[in-house]
Image 1 (tube, rainbow, N blue to C red):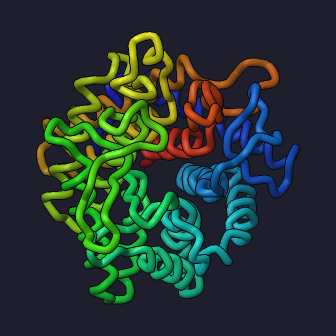
Image 2: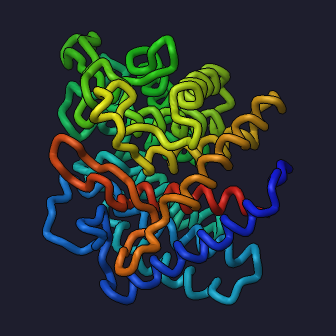
Length: 374
């Protein structure tokens, strides 16, 4: 097992996880039953548009992480976090069959998959499998991709974070078609969105009838040919997780390529600009949510990588990113309701800029729990 190089890191991460629990508990008590997305002026509940409800699994997902950590540590709040996790997960269950939900992985891997890992039950597993089958219905046979929420002709790098639910459903059911869809989508994403230098495009556009790939595009990045940092982090984490399920060396190679680009092009503190190719005056805006996703992905990669030298590099880089986030980006200001400041939702729609964003909170907690896991 890889150990901390500095004892102070463990204390810093433990204190940060306690702060995350404190902020989460406050939100539960202040707005019971509310699923947050991004803050406005440091406050979660507001009238700003959601765009889509793609991240409702992240809030209860954090509660499952708190429960797992408390259980492993013999903590006093184990029962509390389990109760809250179930309470906030159950209302999401009907979405497992909703054909208009394009992010089944984000919703159910964060919640029901963690529930199943902690307490294996047939009815919990059934929800995950049904969500995977619903996601599979978005598959375009000619283009070999799962369509994004934008349109039938759109493939998104974000979807790599949803693909693992297909691999899981295929594994537990023996459904070869689900595995084939997951692999083909991954290979298509690898081919059309991951560039030779390891950078990524957010979106690919296809001819729906012929399946021909037409061009790269973006919804949230600076340009279609730029590298939006959160998209890069999704790829780093997503391809790495898919490798865990498949042990396909091509998926690992892609995760490594994206990781190498992240390490090479990100400032030394580990927190990237919102887009690596944005103009200098605009690039100074960082995105801590991309950093949190990358940190979590790097720590996961470090544990199963076959090369111990690379594994140590990925671990050390993930720890460095976490250290920066804990020391400089926690929302400790009076009245600030989020855990992690400096996140970015959508530049072009002016949503959640330099605020707390729910996926940043979730993957920050995931990375902390991973680093502290016994």
